[in-house]
Length: 147
Image (cartoon, rainbow, N blue to C red; front, side, top):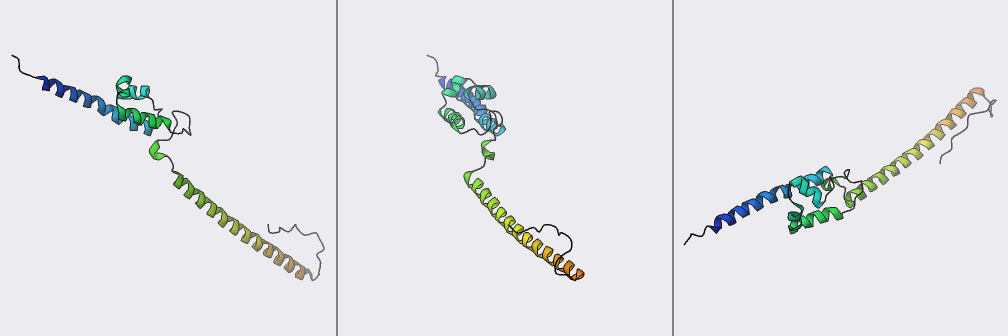
């Protein structure tokens, strides 16, 4: 009777499965970070595994389908990697910051217009006093009024 050496075959099959799985697991984030289109075919080519093997791996299949189902703001091949995408909270914060910046600029603009109107009024008064008249003899420049 022969000795049961099937454990060697089983161990070899486990090593082969792990060796096949490792590049498939590593390729998907690499492709996403590069902005490459994600599909079973593209991952199979990148990881050098068969498409049928990918379809039979529930975790790989779920990850491919999740990445494919997300909205694509850019044409394929030019997408921003998922880890670099902006969150809604971040966009909201940037919008609030921009709104506050606009408010400050509007306030500064209003103050500058008022200061300019005062300076032009003082200049006109000074010119009139030099001429010692109540009304100017020539047409004055248009006065900028505050908004």
